[in-house]
Length: 91
Image (cartoon, rainbow, N blue to C red; front, side, top):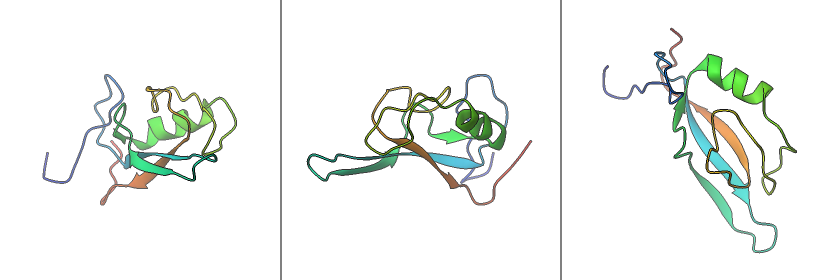
Protein backbone atom coordinates (compact mmCIF):
# COMPACT_ATOMS: atom_id res chain seq x y z
CA UNK A 1 0.00 0.00 0.00
CA UNK A 2 1.39 3.39 -0.91
CA UNK A 3 1.45 6.36 1.43
CA UNK A 4 -1.95 8.01 1.77
CA UNK A 5 -4.01 4.87 1.20
CA UNK A 6 -5.96 3.05 3.89
CA UNK A 7 -7.90 -0.17 4.11
CA UNK A 8 -11.62 -0.20 4.87
CA UNK A 9 -12.15 -0.35 8.64
CA UNK A 10 -14.98 -2.90 8.42
CA UNK A 11 -13.77 -6.19 9.87
CA UNK A 12 -12.76 -8.66 7.17
CA UNK A 13 -13.07 -6.20 4.28
CA UNK A 14 -10.05 -6.33 1.92
CA UNK A 15 -10.99 -3.15 -0.01
CA UNK A 16 -9.06 0.08 0.02
CA UNK A 17 -10.96 2.91 1.66
CA UNK A 18 -12.74 5.46 -0.49
CA UNK A 19 -13.67 7.72 2.43
CA UNK A 20 -12.38 8.95 5.75
CA UNK A 21 -15.23 8.77 8.29
CA UNK A 22 -15.87 11.91 10.33
CA UNK A 23 -18.17 12.02 13.36
CA UNK A 24 -20.08 15.32 13.39
CA UNK A 25 -22.17 16.48 16.31
CA UNK A 26 -23.49 19.75 17.64
CA UNK A 27 -24.43 20.29 21.29
CA UNK A 28 -27.60 22.40 21.25
CA UNK A 29 -27.22 23.31 24.92
CA UNK A 30 -23.68 24.66 24.72
CA UNK A 31 -23.13 25.29 21.02
CA UNK A 32 -20.13 22.97 20.95
CA UNK A 33 -19.18 21.42 17.61
CA UNK A 34 -17.41 18.09 17.35
CA UNK A 35 -15.89 17.27 13.97
CA UNK A 36 -13.42 14.42 14.45
CA UNK A 37 -12.33 11.21 12.80
CA UNK A 38 -14.52 8.27 13.84
CA UNK A 39 -12.19 6.16 15.97
CA UNK A 40 -14.44 3.09 15.68
CA UNK A 41 -14.17 3.02 11.85
CA UNK A 42 -11.79 5.71 10.59
CA UNK A 43 -11.90 4.65 6.91
CA UNK A 44 -14.54 2.90 4.81
CA UNK A 45 -14.96 1.61 1.25
CA UNK A 46 -17.78 2.64 -1.11
CA UNK A 47 -19.71 -0.61 -0.65
CA UNK A 48 -19.73 -0.39 3.14
CA UNK A 49 -20.45 3.38 3.15
CA UNK A 50 -23.57 2.77 1.04
CA UNK A 51 -24.65 -0.12 3.26
CA UNK A 52 -23.89 1.97 6.36
CA UNK A 53 -26.28 4.72 5.22
CA UNK A 54 -29.00 2.34 4.00
CA UNK A 55 -29.07 0.54 7.35
CA UNK A 56 -28.74 3.62 9.59
CA UNK A 57 -31.48 3.87 12.20
CA UNK A 58 -32.61 7.04 13.93
CA UNK A 59 -33.17 10.67 13.07
CA UNK A 60 -30.11 11.96 11.23
CA UNK A 61 -29.47 15.04 13.29
CA UNK A 62 -26.16 16.33 14.69
CA UNK A 63 -27.57 16.18 18.24
CA UNK A 64 -29.31 12.76 18.05
CA UNK A 65 -28.04 9.20 18.39
CA UNK A 66 -27.96 7.44 15.03
CA UNK A 67 -27.25 3.70 14.96
CA UNK A 68 -24.99 2.72 12.07
CA UNK A 69 -23.88 -0.86 11.38
CA UNK A 70 -20.21 0.04 10.79
CA UNK A 71 -19.50 3.56 12.06
CA UNK A 72 -20.13 5.31 15.38
CA UNK A 73 -19.63 2.12 17.36
CA UNK A 74 -18.95 4.36 20.38
CA UNK A 75 -22.62 5.41 20.17
CA UNK A 76 -21.96 9.14 20.35
CA UNK A 77 -24.64 11.64 19.32
CA UNK A 78 -24.24 12.90 15.78
CA UNK A 79 -23.94 11.73 12.22
CA UNK A 80 -21.28 10.06 10.12
CA UNK A 81 -19.83 12.16 7.31
CA UNK A 82 -17.67 10.71 4.55
CA UNK A 83 -14.72 12.69 3.25
CA UNK A 84 -13.42 11.26 -0.02
CA UNK A 85 -9.90 9.87 -0.01
CA UNK A 86 -7.81 11.10 -2.93
CA UNK A 87 -7.72 9.08 -5.05
CA UNK A 88 -10.75 6.95 -4.18
CA UNK A 89 -10.43 3.23 -4.79
CA UNK A 90 -13.00 0.53 -5.35
CA UNK A 91 -11.82 -3.06 -5.40
